[in-house]
Image (cartoon, rainbow, N blue to C red; front, side, top):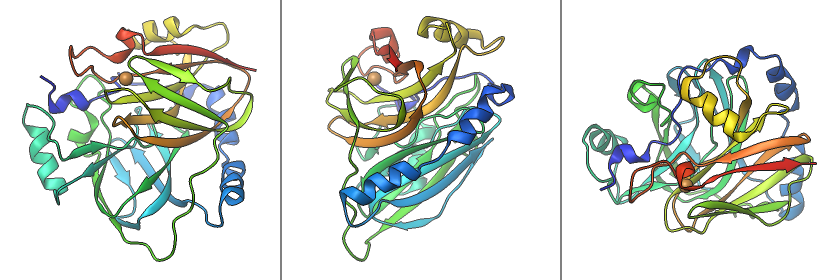
Length: 291
Ligand SMILES: [Cu+2]
């Protein structure tokens, strides 16, 4: 039986990516100018940008935003690894109902919907996700577990209310590549070329899935990165950049990243609905090369 804790995705011990010098290169590249231009071309209106920062152990975010196409930009101030998972609370449920549900073991309530959101960037980096949101009650939450309680239990859980917007919503952005999440694999519509690329992530599987994008260090493999994840000792052979957090089947949303040439890993850490094992154990882990 799946439990509420089965929503927990990334499992990470204390991480100190921010100390690596490579990090600064990525901060310098963290521009979304190309992305917002692309949206402008695709429609008369742009996605509404909502900026959120995360740190040990809290989110800074607005309380109320208008509904419609929304780009979340998530800055991880660290020092731990954090992500910005977005849950929709259906049926008029509130954050207090969610807190109560999270405190008790058992199946996740049907009124909790996993809507993705920016997946974990290394401390000091920013990740993003663009998705369509309807009016209602939402929660910003971090499921990352650093060997103790998951971060939401330490304060990284924050309500967000979406209210009806005036005027039409922006159209969905144009994507360079579509990434299909299947049980249990990633299928790209075409190779990702170097540059600022918008990826449409579509969950066509029967289960929830995520994509954590990791830039692998030169000569490192995804196997090296996963081995390092077990103990997290020594310099990391890869750097988390973001991607999209856990999404319900049938959902799609977008993220934009500056891809420099090299090797990257796509990883799903979400637990399987049937056996509870992380999806990467079932094969949902892939190495790609960007040229
Ligand atoms: Cu998965």
